[in-house]
Amino acid sequence: MVRNFLERLEAGSFKIVCDAGLLAEQSAQRAFVAGGCVRDLILGRKVKDLDIVIDGDAALVAKKFASLHGGTVVRYPQFGTATVKFPDGRAIDFASVRQEVYPSPGALPVVTPGTLEQDLFRRDFTINAMAIEIGPERFGRLIDHYNGLNDLKRKAVRVLHSKSFIDDPTRILRAVRFEERFGFPIEPVTLGLIRLA
Image 1 (cartoon, rainbow, N blue to C red):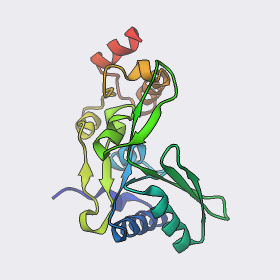
Image 2 (image 1 turned 45 degrees about the horizontal axis):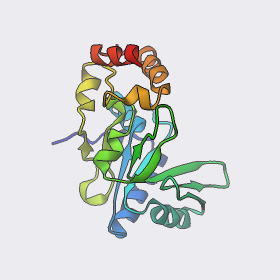
Image 3 (image 1 turned 60 degrees about the horizontal axis):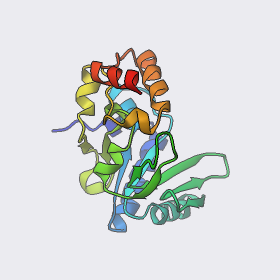
């Protein structure tokens, strides 16, 4: 049985995740937490920001979530995202699964709808390219297409593809930051790609 890392969330965050997953499922969509919050859950670190990803219409789920919790929705249709804002200053981001294409090195990406696998592949490193399903039917199921869990266990910062640093050079700084913050060495192939970039 796969360990349910979501149980490590603080009570307020756990309720947010449960509500978002239920609302998505009621709309015949799947919902996940993804990215750095999954990495931090697995490492047993405090989660600061929830990255809620919807395989479908994120704005629709955000609208239902805002209605349930007394928030307002700000939509960003060009990115397939929506933010629910609350009077106390809190904000929760919802994003539809998407893919990115960089028209030239260092340019802003062109965002289009995609699959969860493509959404995870567009991220910077394998340790940030995992998701956990939050719908009631599959609550807690870890999705790890790119062996991020194995890289967390072996404490390695590994890039997802060879053009990653050319597409977005700021990922070089993030690699160094993760190496310093977590004590995870940058693995040799990734280090070589940094030097090439």
